[in-house]
Image (cartoon, rainbow, N blue to C red; front, side):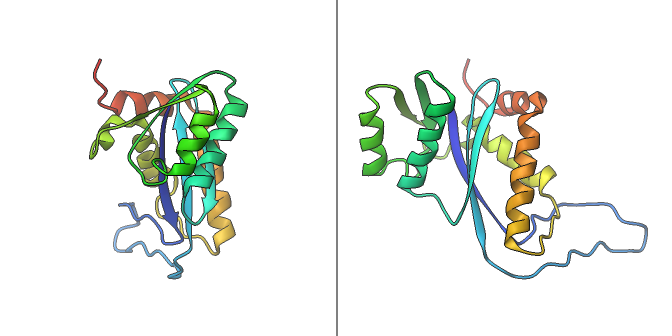
Length: 169
């Protein structure tokens, strides 16, 4: 399972869009800096995610790993990047306490093209959250969660993440 994190804020992720001729599209937003962070684990057939306010740290990563173990009742090979939270003492202690139920491998530095989750995040931001201007933080949270749930039921999106990842065969 490949795992990665990303963040979104109340500021819209702007993308090119269409408008009637002569009418410039206008995004009305407020300049709040509240942030959500998302973590996802992608397998060949599914992905699992968690969205939290703020950013990810060691205890939040452990919470996600615990939820994965409850849902996937098999041994896990976790492949992720070198985020400091991944390398923290509390995460290493938790992984060691699983007695081999979770194995960790780290991706090489500066190689996001090897992680299929990066392509999931790109799709989420470029297509699902594009030009979305929430009125408040709760609306952003609910909308983002619903869009990820919707993507979970679209196997073509998961397959596309694997196809785009440049994994050596």
